[in-house]
Length: 433
Image 1 (cartoon, one colour):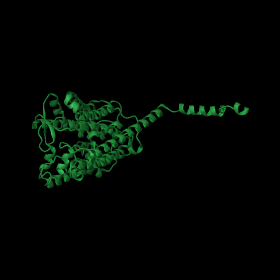
Image 2 (tube, helix red, strand yellow):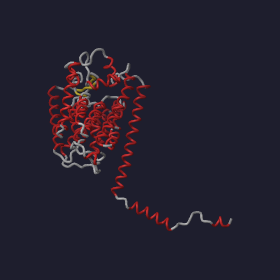
Image 3 (tube, rainbow, N blue to C red):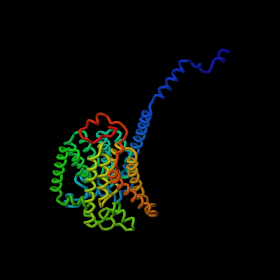
Image 4 (cartoon, one colour):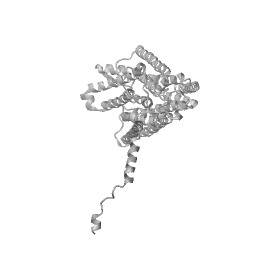
């Protein structure tokens, strides 16, 4: 009993144990600062992945539940318009006007149900597939880190992500450019034509094929687009493209557009025409002037991209799409999703203030949607809603301005994998490839 009482509670420290502890301290001390930074980046990437996936999953569930068990869909929503198009008698474009190109029209027909709620529920599932396709395309073309950046940057835009059809053109455009980056010119060119026939905006990506001398992809894209447009006009009539370009001949400026936001901030009242909220009068000369400015700005962006080293894709694509949005008489919240995949690519190609600018644009776009959805702000503090809208458009204008005026690119400090450097396209891949 006495031996048990006098036995030490813990084993005495041996010389070998001290040696092992010293060895561990030596190993930790031997880790370089760059290794610590790499570990921190990996942890940050994991956190962004968790946040992005969780946000997308939660919003998908909420959107689906809203349509399956919520109140009837409001008649002024996109889903109600999709149901109206699918249920209308006759041939689209020819017998009744439609503001969506044929690929988007086909998706509307697939998702449509007998009422708005069923259409919305079907649409959520369809858009989820294209959301996943966008993630897969970014991962295929520029690496999984770029896909994570997309999931994170689109988190503020989830309020309308699954209730519109804009992700269809985005997924097609992302896969088109990714296939061209990986040397699949024929398939990439056809996919880009399909993206244009889903929404017109991917046309601003065509100069990328020109400046990189991807003639084969350009020929396939132009041929497929010409053939698709011919079939469209033959089936729906010559007025089809005009209905899409003018949103069914809707007059005025949409109040979120660059010109419309200024008119609304100055006190002009708006009216709803063809399911679009318009303010003021948009003369033909003003639209022509903005179109000319847009063409000049987009040409300047891609010319600048062709003259700079290292080559990049994300920032010039964001700048070109931003110019298109600023020049259009219509700028609705879902259009901001067009920027998301290219912003994710730019996020991995750049560092510093460019990342903050891109993140701020996505965040403010999401805040603006919440402000418009808030009855209190809209009716009690409408000045704050106008201020947020003007700030969003200012950030949108800052993107091309920064790209055209900056003198030196601050690239991402990571190292690119060999597989990415072997791509045929001379655009510098992201560090995550």
